[in-house]
Structure formats: C-alpha cells, structure tokens
Length: 235
Image (tube, rainbow, N blue to C red):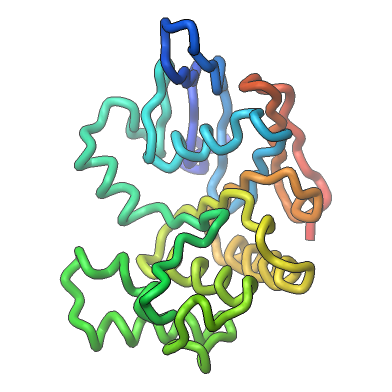
C-alpha cells in the first residue's frame, strides 16, 4: 500500500478521563487503525463504545492519554494547541450531532462564520457561503435563521459550514440522529458525492443506513477495537 494514501494512523491510542482516580473512565484502549484518503470510514458501536472520543482525537479537538495519532506523517499528539487549531481550520470539517448553528445568525452567516478569522470581507464571506448553500439546495434560504428551517435544512447548513474552508477531511458525529428519513437520503447522496471528489469522510454512527456506502467499518465496544470490516460492496 502506498503510504501517501494513509490520512490517519493511530498507534496504541488510549484516552482516559479522570486518570488514576476512583472515577477513572477508560474511554478508549490501545486503538490501532489506519484511515485512507478518499474513503468513507464508519465508526460503529453502541452508546459508550468510544466513537465520539475517537473522532475528537482524530479531529484534533482532544489529546490522547497514551499512544500516538498521525495525520499524514505529522504526529498530532505532540503539537501545540495553536498548531492543532490551525489543522482544524485548514484541513478538517465537522458535522455535529446537534448542528451547533448560532440561532440569531442567518444560514449564510452560520456557514461563513469559520471564515472570519481568515480575514475575508463580508462580501467574500457571503458569496462563498451562498454558493455552497445553492449547491446543497438551499439557495432560497440563505437569509433564514435556524428556527425558520427544518431539521434536514439545518443539517445541510451545518454541512455547508463544514465545507466552507475546502477541507480534505470531513468528520460527522451521529449525523442522522436529528433528521428524518428523507433528509438522511439527501445526506447520503451528499457524502457519497464528496467521496467521489476525493474527500476523506469519517462517520461516527450506530445507524445502519450508512453501512452499505462505507469502504471500511471500524467496530468498537466499551473503548476496545472489536474488528475492522473491509466493505467490498458499496454505492
């Protein structure tokens, strides 16, 4: 295998909360995985299996207690907070379970929010955000606030926000939990289209609707890696 195709690699990755205390929680233990470029990877397991902890570590939001994480050939676990923030801003887009939209802002303002630290003016921010919202079928909703949109529309706004900086990696945490079946179908179409364009996508989910579309399924239980399924058939 060409090492250049490996986006993420973990070695002995472990995460403990309240370490060395009576209330210690071993959220992840000795996780060794590789995630390749241009694939959809599913992190699967019941509640408490460590899925969200793992995507927080891969997404450079949190740090491991033990072990290493590599993004390409760079070890994330030794970088400064400032360097991790720069990686999140430039390379990784996040779709959150509860959308995390700012209620008082319009759709385009929510989408464009990550551009503010990069010193785009308002016209540039609105133009980029409007183009993404149009692409996702929300061209007529750019001035609407989250409370004026359905769950599926809010989900698409959150996807547009995740894509606004042209990330190479998209990480989604339980993306189907707050939307209906039709919105889930639209979400799958969007994600599979992004994969065709070369994006690396990681989805933390217990929803089996995503499984046929994945290249790899990583199964977790109680913080332990159970197995890794290579998905030979996909759509």
